[in-house]
Image 1: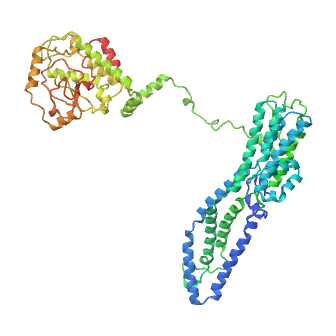
Image 2 (image 1 turned 90 degrees about the horizontal axis):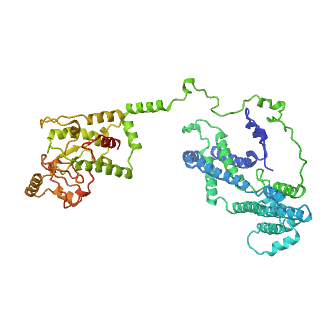
Image 3 (image 1 turned 30 degrees about the horizontal axis):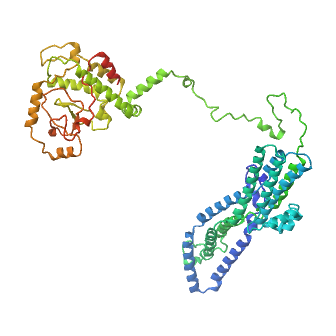
Length: 622
């Protein structure tokens, strides 16, 4: 029977395992003592031969051989090979035990599912339960040597009462060259179907549950059969065995004590008994013996499974559950704590210490928090603190703003269309009486509009180079975009920018005062015949472009930029904004270029001016 010592190690104490070292049954001494004696005998024989039988020349040769074996014995990977092998064997050993079929679940289902206290009902339950036990015996006698010795033939199974003679004839009439442990399971299913037809099984759910339990039982029988058929690969077992045996064969020569007079390193002492070599053999060879015992737990070793005991227990318990205990109920009565809302079972004197222990409430139950940190904070103060922390760290604020307010494609196109329509509405209104304005006014307006429109400009959102210049068909460079890293996203700076954007500017170059509203809206001169004629003449007199880079840009469909006279200002074409890196290569734009790029180029949606208060609020909101 399996050696059980669980109660002896229930409590940890001083040298608790030391008491187990004196046990003999199932111990390492019982398993390994023969190998230890054989190893020590061979070591002693070699030592005696070296000391007393060899001449001096032979001794010198043997000493060199011993040193060589000792130096290279460590190349054999003992711990690595044995560790993986024993781990595999132990896991396989436990999985085989969990695959042993137990009838407990089936007997409970039969006792409650197959109805009838008469002779027919009793016969059905006992026969069904006997079929499950017969299937377990057939598979166990196929894998366990102890069970096979108990039931060597089918006659012994019949004589033991697990099978009738008629069932044996039926069993032997089924010709199959495979193991027929599954036949009683099929008989079980057929008999359960008969019980269902007779009304002994009341509903389909109970019938389904009964078949599911039988399939689980049969699956475990099949796992045992496959564990017996599929062993650990033989090459793995051979490698481990050869590694252990070859290591200690080398140690028989390499671990000999040599003559100290010769002065070999590490051989200062001359001992007759190799204590540490014997301990090493005991540990490594014992490790191999553990795997040897556990690789097949269905044998007759001290630690093998008690399969015969399991057969007796399962058969007796299952028959009692489906026959004697069917419908057997004790009389119901009120329990001892019927009127007690807080029942507390009593303790003996040996277990009173349990009452003194406080009940566990959780790992944070006794955690202390300062009182000043236990008050709830208003959400407004939390928001203000977050704003202050953002102002302290501008880089973090910029990063958070980009993550939280990154425009989607739909929202970006909607905002672009709204800004474009606002600019077109401004162009359709009556223009100012001043046909042109100076370059200084354009620069001041450029500085005002850059602060308002740079954040939402199209090139910056589309990921274009924000340091490039933008050219309008009305002539001149409109603005130079700032890099995104210098843009500040905080509320205070935006308010100051809005205030500075709408201040009244005096036009000193023209010598006339414009009204407060008109000063905020610089007017674009209307297209005249003179300016159109001058521009056409300039186009005609301009030599063709011969720059290879410009021609290459046109061929590849890249933006083609051109320059014009700064004083030649007309109605701008908002869909012909293009980007250039080199101002020397700027050319006069054409509304319909040969490459067709101007009409497809997205405009730089910067608000140059705001006409009225309503439009101003809407643009700021965008």
